[in-house]
Image (cartoon, rainbow, N blue to C red; front, side, top):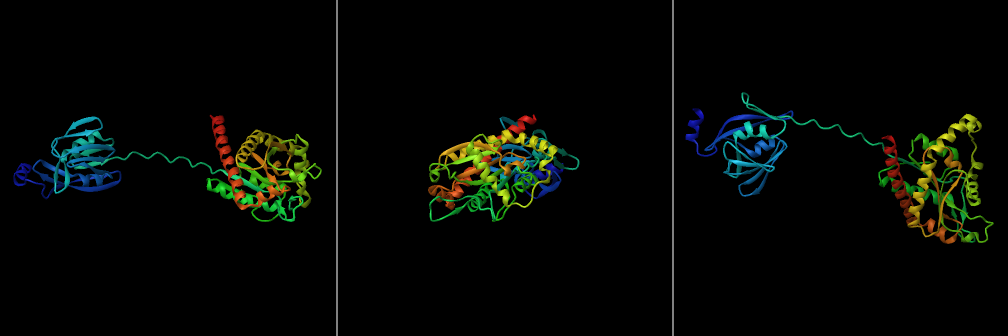
Length: 383
């Protein structure tokens, strides 16, 4: 009776008749119910705000009411709406007054509870409840990958010096540090954590470099070096190119030469591994290294392929040798000879900061490619 009288007295949207409480999850909002010549109505924008939704205007008198997980296409003056490919009736047509879209009260009390998931209406208390779906637990954060970057030599151990016959000089320890720092930056730009065995001109024992890598739980160990020609070669100053080694028994005379050259740093070290002659220690160590032998070979091949795309020197291939720096790193580990410092043209190339960054980027790209494949293989093995 009261509504009938009110309808006779009002021909447009007037003062609020009452309120409806809209609960969106734990948040409660009061939305006014007004009376129009079509019956009780609620402002669409107020309802959308209470439900954290929105009103989209498509054309004059055409709207999309996006609330509670549904999109309802509404036309003012038409008592039908579209939800997806369905046409559904309303108890009364929506109206527009003073630029505001009003929806019939039944849109709140009856329509939304029928079409929207998790929506109910308590008629007695005039409460529209939208129960928000529980959010899925956040995915477990992937462990950050860690790459150990080892700049060869350092401190009193200058490494190789060259080039042969020139009146200027490069030292291996300087080139390896510059390239390793550039490699660190390139890997960090690719989202990888990097641990440097040395970041200044200091001597780190060969056996300690692997221990650093193990203590930091490295995923990959990259040792950067500069090659030197055998002075007994016919034209030692002409030797050029790059090569990548993984830990295994040296198979060629040249590999044994490089192995001896890079292991020579032990003469600068004052400590030695007491457990090195322990038979049990040797057996455990051998098992740990064999576990990573195949992966180290794959990493070496990936690095060599990447360098071949940009390095001006000849590709000297993937080789194997018993480098002491790789012995104690229980992870895929390689030693990269980035060029011959004894060759004048290659020495100039290696000391150029721009070329150093290019070499570093190439090794970083190869490392990322290898790590992606390694993770795929590890996931497949665990299934």
